[in-house]
Image (cartoon, rainbow, N blue to C red; front, side):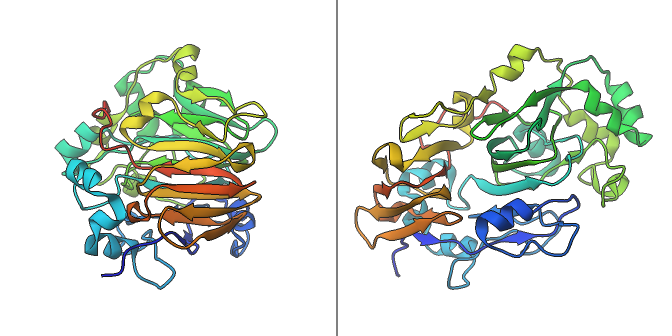
Length: 351
């Protein structure tokens, strides 16, 4: 068996129900498709399929092999023995996306692990996080309820197609490039128009829509995970948050001259995934052995594994590094976002 080595991932962008995708195409050098652009997501290093699809969403390696199949053939080579012992050999415990909100996303949420296990027979929910790459002036995200809402009031709004009113019920927070935001499962949220993010999440495609008017989706049919509205809406966390509650889930963009490797998310994210901002121009970037995905945002660098061939990187490249490559370094002036699964010794997930 050939040992896995660092490589560049081909594009994996596809159509969706909301508009966007031009920013991803500009970064990756791909075709954004016909206007209005509706390719707002690229699924990166994905062993997760889009809901209801057989293969859409799965990432392929440069030779055309599905990453899912490569992992199944050599889980330790890709993930490491400690990861496999803690989390199993079925996947990477991680889904990374590029997400370009060409319009505001509808208010929605994702179920917790406990809800998913009980009602969907799945091991994961969908806690996620956003590392902001680009943001138009005045761009915002919505996160958590700021006004009280009973479950019956929520159900009435959703069933009557008035879920858009929930936008006013959310906290809104301006965002700028470099910000990192953790979104616990169960939390109502929305990404505003004009925001490009690296989204890091649990490896599922589970969304409960609270609004859909004006979007190219039949929310009455597709918005409740096939559970019916009574059960689906039980997944919503109706906790009223304070501004400080929101603030604890945000890591602001670093100041100029920050270290070469800076945590991009609050500590609570470590139970689900890891993300760091990378600036090789600020110093040598050293990364321990393990499955890793690096999205290069600017500059150029060489990815130097402990044992193997150097991989050249420039803006728009996405490098996939297996555990078998050993510890590795970046040499150059590249900037980017480094994402990894939770560490084998990470605390148990609370949501």
